[in-house]
Amino acid sequence: MTPEIKLPLETANLIIDDFKNSDYARLREIALNINHKSDEDNEKGYMPFYAFQVDKDTPDRDVLISQKVADFIIKSHKEKLEEPRNVYRMAIRLKDNGLLIGNVTINMLPVEENGKLIYGDRGCCLDPQYAKRGYANEAVRAVSHEFFKYYDHMDITAHPNNAYSSKLIQRSGGRKVGSKTSNYGRGEPRDIYRIDRDDFYKSCAFNQQMPNLLGLLIKRKLQKGDSQK
Ligand SMILES: CC(C)(COP(=O)(O)OP(=O)(O)OC[C@H]1O[C@@H](n2cnc3c(N)ncnc32)[C@H](O)[C@@H]1OP(=O)(O)O)[C@@H](O)C(=O)NCCC(=O)NCCS
Image 1: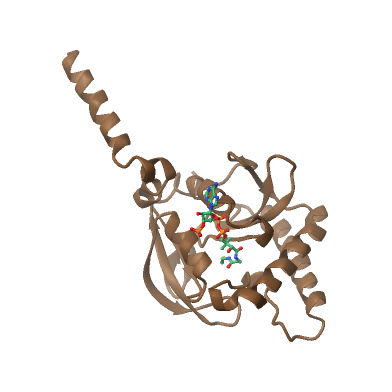
Image 2: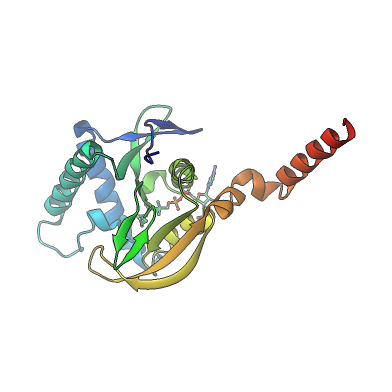
């Protein structure tokens, strides 16, 4: 069975689906907001999304950011047409009003890198105005759930200084397993994380709030079944 994601995905607060050309203006706004926030909060561990990153002092910075956003949307259209589709570069929208608030991307086919297969390579960015409300976690959990229907682990990388990214990865069960030089951005090093399927499901809010309850319910059901024999 070819791994795929049937879009749109719907969560409690979000709709996750493909980008449209009409998303350009709003995505540009988000990319500018992310770059500006990283100018201010870089020391606090906030890093720009590599696909939209342009250094602060670069001449015509906003024009370059706009170009990166246009390229990003064009790329997403091309990836959508691939057979079988590998990269799902998706829009995160608020369910209430359809507003675009970010992007979540995942590879549904393993990709070879230096003789090793990489699974998932999940990435996410959010408009800083909609951060710290749990939306990024909600979006990455939704796409990871689709991914774990086919695979037992996921590989992710994060810039070692990106406190927000590593927190997001760890919140969905990720653990650091190494580091490497990167193919992204300027080739700066990346921490390597692995998420095992079991750890992903153990990291869900229900299990965190009531650890072992699920196991207890299953055990009770089994015992009840035994007593009825
Ligand atoms: C990485 C990134 C997406 C994380 O966004 P985020 O806002 O930290 O993540 P969430 O939306 O899941 O919010 C989680 C926070 O909201 C808080 N929160 C508030 N209300 C909440 C609610 N109702 N439900 C869940 N969490 C809630 C959580 O406690 C958590 O806070 P904490 O990090 O202080 O513990 C964002 O920082 C970003 O876009 N960065 C720039 C791009 C980037 O670096 N991307 C990663 C590389 S691919």
